[in-house]
Length: 270
Image 1 (cartoon, helix red, strand yellow):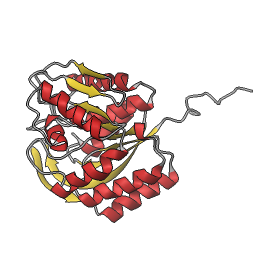
Image 2: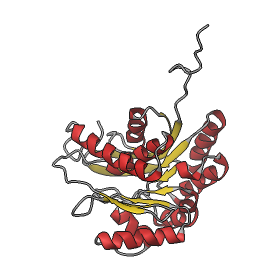
Image 3: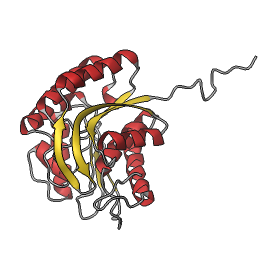
């Protein structure tokens, strides 16, 4: 008799959950995250926090999911499936921040496999998390996650200090590490003159991951793709620094391969 216990069909892939907004142009949010999960062989689940009227040219309107619907979705999924890790993106409201916090507290998902991409504002300037939601995020959600992946503007908002250059990035990331023990911080540097990412691990290890400018309009959703790829690399067994470097490489490769789509900033992953 043939032993099929190690056959491809018998091996179950890790299951990752994305909790984020819905971008109908599929450049960011839920749909981008699911593309990344699939590319890494991870089975993806999703819970939508908000619907957006959006295209490659920007965000026109946001309609938040009710906290009760979000909570019911999360709990129903959690009762049915063994969730290995979770990526959290746009949350829209303080109530939704509370909802995901309560879910994390009882989910049993290891903190090291919880990645928070603190989406505060769209690149076109639209507010994507209410001011009271930002306060809730810092007070009650960041302490529950293993990874925080802000860009430089989000880093400044969370640390409460200006971040004009690389030295300030290191100081602000250090401030977050000191105030949230056990937190790994990965600052995406696309807004810097040289797009290097800064990684500061909970262990104290720190490193700049070198990047390069690309001549492309396919730049929408880079933060979503980075954080989702980071979760995937962690679930597949990479160490923390290796996972961050792998996620950065995945974003660059995706941008290079992306097809131009739309009249604005197209998706960085096709």
